Length: 405
Ligand code: CTP
Image 1 (cartoon, helix red, strand yellow):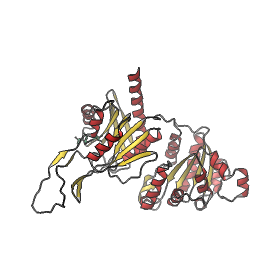
Image 2 (cartoon, rainbow, N blue to C red; image 1 turned 30 degrees about the vertical axis):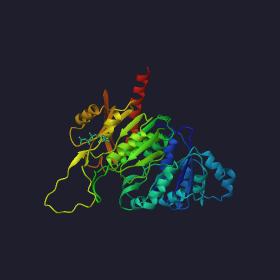
Image 3 (cartoon, protein in one colour; image 1 turned 60 degrees about the vertical axis):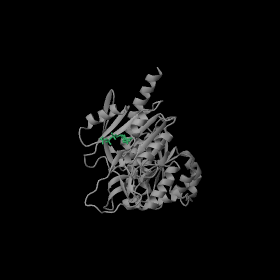
Image 4 (cartoon, helix red, strand yellow; image 1 turned 90 degrees about the vertical axis):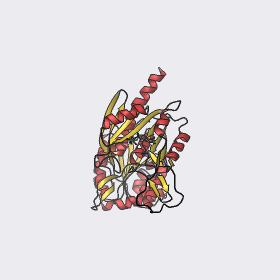
């Protein structure tokens, strides 16, 4: 279990229905050894009482910026300095907007603006509010500044709708918070990750693509960044915000992706090909929209460059991890790809299983390398990515040790 012993955590609670989970989170954090203080917004107090959070944290709860007694005991600047990390859970769409725009109109926003410690934000809101362009733009601003987003989770919501926007469960959240304090295993290591589908044009209005959402590759890039790596994510059109601490390069076609990867591989020690690169593209792209004239038509396709295989041929050779999406004979097919493309490791997923893989928040992976394999059971892509990065770390550092001895 990741420990939080001697860590000072300031938990910020904002006004959403998920605030009922905050006391449980405080308990989980204290179980891991953290010293926890709580700051609530005015709206949060409409959902849960300060007394509850005082009871579970063991400290009086702070709520007002202009509270003379509390300010005399520990002023808001001191509070911001005291914390090793500030965790806002739940963070409403309104609070995320205020944070993105640097507001300091209550105690919690002021402390967040003042702190030099890490800022962790666990969003919780209706799924439409989460998907709204304004919220996504605010999340992108925060991610670019190095604020870590924890979640949201997807599933049934208090409002009766289903989708992404749920607060992560307290135990998952506590584990993710503890993970932020793990020694950065990949410090000083440069990693390039590909993600998402590619889009191969046919004419000015049509293209060939696939069902990849990009979520797995983005989660892998974020997990590497959390582990201290310097990460470049080359992504096809996925419509996802840049993960915290990751340099995002957006491309459309397989050829653009190949060129972007080539441009960023110099000095990179690890490559992970999580993109669902189109294997074929139109042999000729029509300059005008193709008209429907004949009863039937055929489209000539030609192979795209195999990015993964060409990275594996580079010298010096990086540690190369591929993905394999299969609908049958998962292990056999993945093992063949491991060998034919000269990979160090391959993560295979069965895309025929409903609720897992493509377009889903969850996935399960069978990870294979020359001398072994491991099963990573169904989990949210964020958690799975962290486990995969752990496994890659074990093999990568073992290989380095062997090569240097
Ligand atoms: N890949 C790549 N460049 C391509 C095609 C695939 O880098 N032009 C990478 C993917 O990112 C993934 C792995 O190769 O890591 C997938 O291997 P591939 O043989 O393309 O798998 P499938 O497309 O599933 O192959 P097939 O259709 O033959 O099963």
